[in-house]
Each structure stands twice: as C-alpha cells, then as structure tokens.
Image (cartoon, rainbow over all chains, first blue to last red):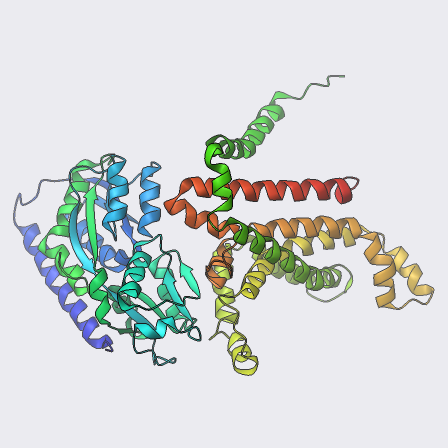
Length: 260
Length: 261
C-alpha cells in the first residue's frame, strides 16, 4: 500500500491545530498544574525524533520556564549511556528490553509505562525502482537491502518478522539505528529496508511504505519512565505525564504510532 | 646552568601525558582478562581484524598513488592558486568524518553525481562494499600523507633537481631518481600516519560503506556495535586494535623513521 503524503500532512496539521487549542485551554485554567521549572533531558529512541520534538515544544508552551533537551539515538546505545551515568531525566525506549537494562541497574524511578506501539513496514525509495512487493523480496541477493543491527530494537523486530515469514534476509548493511536505515532509503542507496511505519510517514514523499502481514509478529512496545537519578524530578515526572496525556497521545497517533 | 624543567612547562606536560595515557591504561584495567581467550576466538574478531588491515593497507596504497603526485604538484608544480589548493586538500582533515561519509554518498552513491554514471556504465556500486570502505578510508587519510610529503618536498633542496635538469634529465626521471629518494623519510612518515588514520576510521566508513560482517564491518565499527550489547567484547576488540597499531607503529619506527624523527 502506498501512503499519500497529503493525507499524512493534513492529519498532522489537524492534530497540531487541536493541540494548539488544547494548550490555550489548559493555560487559561488557573492552577491546573503546579508551577514547575528547570531543564528536562530526555533520552528517546531514534524513531521518536519527530513526535517527541513536537511534544517537547508543546510541553514547553504549557510550562513556561521548563526547557526540554533531547538525545535521540538507538535505544540500546541510550540504555548504555544512561547506565554509564549520562545525565538523563527521562528515558523513552523503543523496546522493553532496553528499558529493563536501565531498570535492572536501578535507574528507573517507579514503573515504566508503555505509551505507544509501532510496527515494521517495508520502506522503498519513491517510485519503487526494484519493484519490491513483499518480505520475500528482501531475501533476494540482487536487491540492495538495509536493516537495523540486531542489537537495536528495530533489528530485533526485523529478525522476528523474517523468522515468522520463513524468509532468510539478504541485507547489505546493518545500521546502528532506524534513522540511519531510513536515510539509505531516502538517498536511494538501497532498494528496500525495514523501518517503522512512523519513519515511513516522517519521510514524506521520498519514501513509500509497503505493509506486510508478518509485521503483526513483532509489534514494538515503547515504554517511558522518569529516571532515578533525574536532577529535576518534578519536571521529569510532568514530561512523562504529558506524553501519556491525551495531548501527547494525539501527537503520537498523528505520527503513525498505535495506542498502547 | 639550571637543567630542571620549569614548573610552568613541566606540570602541563605531565598532565598532558596523563591525559593521553590514562584512558588507555583504563582499557587494560577493565579488560576481562579471564574470559579473554574465549572472547578472542568468538565475536567475529578475526574477520573484522583481517578486513581492517586489508582495507587500511589498500587505502594507503591508493593514497600513495594519488597523494605523492598531488604533494609534488603543491610543492613544485608552480600552479596558480596553490594556497587555495592546499586549503582544499586539508578540508577532509578538519571535516567531521561523518560529513565526509555523507559527501561521498552524495557523489559516489548509486544516485550520486558520479556514482550514477558508474552504476549505469560499469554496473559498479561502491556503497556497502569493501571497495567502499577503502574509498572512505582513503578520503579521510590522504591529507595526512599529502601534508607530510609536501612538507618534506618544500624542505628539500631544489638545487639537486635543477642540477639533474641541467644534466639533461627529464622531469619524470628527476622526480624518480632525485626528488623521491630525497624525501623518502617524509613519504614513509606520511604513509605510516595515513595507514594509522585509515585503520581507526569510523564515521565516514559507517556512513558511506554501511556495516555488514565480513564485507564492511571493520574493527572500529565492531567496537561500536559491541559496546551496545556486550561491553566486555568491545573492550577486547579495542585492546586488539590498540595492540596491532602499537606493534606496527613501533616496528616501523625502528626500521624506517627512527633516524628521521
């Protein structure tokens, strides 16, 4: 199935407008949220780049005095950085596995909560030059294929769908995060790749998405948690709550995420 | 005469030394010595190491073939706008390697300016191949060779070349028999630097050539990916890379550069 760029753009615009209205309403209500201030450093999976940047802006608008800084990368790299003492206040992972690595090291404050789900889609350069139709085409050696490395969540998910489909993947490169994979598709360097449906949507018209049934076998849960070592516990907690709120969810839905 | 080192120089000098050496010592301290043998045989180490050595050496050859003439052009060619040319040559030296990788992708990629022609006419596509790794490494490492050889050429006495010319030697003969032997130490030093830089190359390689075991996964890429799931394996890989570079540099230094530097 080919996604229409216009539809996606329209959906995003509508969601943004709704959010802007919601934001005004909440600011008008006195004492709706306790005044918080300070910086929040959010470590988030690469696939959250667009949606969390949007949510961060909305959150800052709703809480003047709070500044949100993001570090987007592969979830496993982020978990590693947090466990090594990187100054993070919130962690949003593309997989419970990486959240567990942080939790096992005593890094999570309270409980991690699943806030979104994502599924894989085949991404091809616009026009689909290699005439890719399904997962079986990603097992053909003559096609240039990019996948995530197995160490990162999108790579682990890719492994599952290939197993479910009984296809032996023939990748030409195993990238360190999903955005690096997407870039190779955008530049037309590969004929096809497995990325999240949200990445296909974020790439707009440069990339076409092809859904496939085996994607059901590897739905990624995205957990989020405030971290035990957060220097600013209150705004960190508030950011997590904001992501889980209806406003946060609307942005995630507009970006193509499924609800938890 | 007071032969003691003045404190104002001595203290920062010792700090500087510690700054460079302590992280390497940390690698040795944290190394999983008990599981080292099993780590060495597993984790695709041999493959990555072989590929690293092969690619760095091929990249160095490529740099020599193209870089020595380029250095000669800059030092002796008498071309106009030499300052600008030299600045252009050193750009990859200061450019973040990832940016270099992106630039290579845009030019030599399948849809790149030059890459498109290569693909259409010869069916050659460089990204995601071992040849792509060599190209990425050569791009980043060549300035080291060029700068080093050019410096040697400019320091060398050009009157020997003039003498050779007055005796009837052609420019090519002069270059081969007079110039090159004169600057040989500079060429060797540049070659070693170039090789070491190519061996450690990461950013341009992963951006342009991607990452696939046995094809494009060199040691630095293997270290980076291992760090995400198995830090012990990453430390072992780093140690091996460190040991290889130290051995190669030390052996070359004794044999070739000892007298020069």
